[in-house]
Length: 140
Image (cartoon, rainbow, N blue to C red):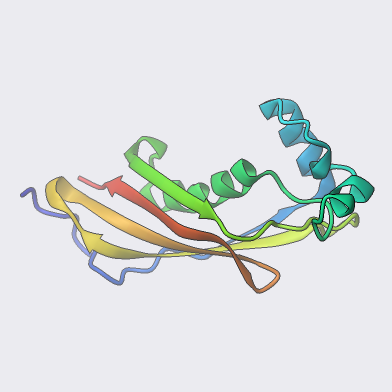
């Protein structure tokens, strides 16, 4: 086993990341991703299908959560595995503030070859929106 970087132990906390997602962000993401599903921009349709309102794209939410890990690692290429489960939608109000997404992380396991597993807690409006969100990061 390779030595792990100094100072990274089980329990090491990642800096908290807070992001805002607005309806304008949803439009930009839809254009970039090609995901033009109407639930990401039309309040009436979103409610008709049983959603509480317009929701953020799941992959946008997952990407924002991953950004907390890449910022901590200092290199996006250091993330060698990443997975999430979507547990609640991120409802994005039609106002200037949008929705707030908070990402907290901690090192949950030290693995072989200088890798660590980081577990993430991702919330919006006080509700957990991603479950089993974790990344394996190569630090050495």
